[in-house]
Length: 456
Image 1 (tube, helix red, strand yellow):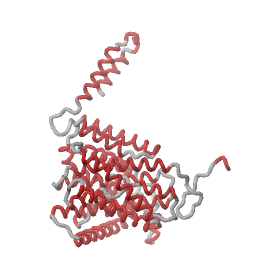
Image 2: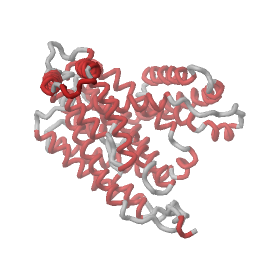
Image 3: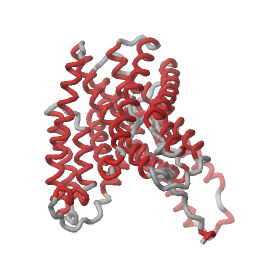
């Protein structure tokens, strides 16, 4: 950058003699910049120098913004671009080595998990959620169980893993990503019922994946597993999540509204969220459900205040800092997943792709069982292809490394290809649904097509 600036500064000083412009000097500078880029990956330690890492961070932010704009225009999720960038920065160029990534995994994974679940709760409309809750619960539960079964059988018989390790892999990739689904449904012409159902379902499967995965972590470390442990742990996690989420979320609705115009109001909310995460972990819950319920309370405080019959002050717009923070965490974490990608074993690549195809067909079967004629053909087809795995799976795939579990390095690699394959399948499927016209009826969750201005 400095070389480029110095070059232009020198040329601007001589602007009056453009006829004598030294083209050789220009070409030499271009060659120097190319040589500088070629040496970025050369460093003595596991991480490059500060200016190189900052350059990589700048590229991540730029690609994150560009990918988000591209997603809004085309409906193609930006997750794939960010993960590929991580592969380029890590395994290809070696700007950041895997051993450096592993050191920060526990901290960044925990931050990403609670921020994204909190954001998911903020964006859920509780009225629409209640109306489609039975569909979302059925779709989430059946879809999660079928995905876990398919991945478990595949990992055990194809990869020759133990049953507990196979179930852990299945639970990690068992649910669709709320981080991706929330963004997708906002840009698709499906009914509000379908949007609410898919959003709530993805949030539920993120919770299921997180809770069951942490149960399996404990089971693998203990060397045994039984259904009583599953019931006790799952029940305790749900109770703790609900008690902390509601118990702190309800009074904080009032406090956060009073602090809406305060200079550091959002930072206080974030501090409460971090404390809740600590308490949830202390009482046996991963923090995911607590963060979701806490976000749900704050995101629906206007409606909930009427139900709970207490008066809130005037509610202003939420601090835009949250959107910026969520964007940064989301962008950097998918690049983070790419950093840990490894292409050493071809069987992991093939397994990840094939198991994703099996999950897609399983999702289609579950969707046909769950959805009634209340939903239009467009709603159903979008539901069938909505299988993107994402942030929750990526976060959970990093935990086996920090815990020293068997096949620890295999989890991020397999999950990487499952996420990438699922995003591609979802993108292709949504592209095909664009040819399905929405029905005329506006009842029963159907979509009303936009009016043609020329007919008025």
